[in-house]
Length: 166
Image (cartoon, rainbow, N blue to C red; front, top):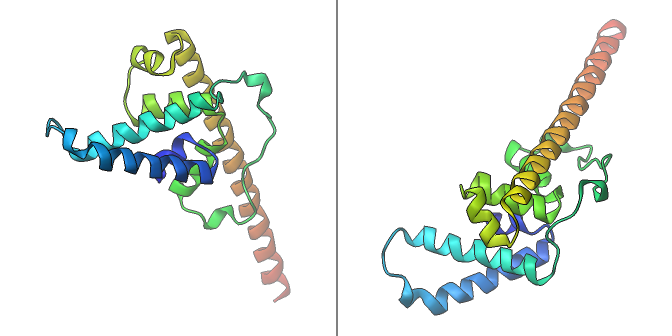
């Protein structure tokens, strides 16, 4: 489910796409020719199905202006989450187009030319979307760092008050 969640932000849709992918895998298992790993073959089907879902629903690319620059995706209990959960939240907060290009380039290790062909976009659009995705990720990580720093300062202040009044 992690792969489909990386591409599709809606939990229910991600689950549906994953189940559809398993049906495709089940129906086409006889076509697997043992060239490469079974896991890699299955992953490719899932990734392609996720991209197909995004295309079908025409929710691929948006301009940076349409993204709420001040959106804060973190809850107050964020400190209890592990880094993988935080990263998944950040990835899910990206617009679909940014997330798709980021996943294909960073996670799946496709080249911009391949991404352009898969997503029906230009190589420059792929590069631009990756740049914007990285910029948004960095901004959100910076916000998280600033929030954690503020929490640390507040906790330190509370400890100092308790020590001096204890």
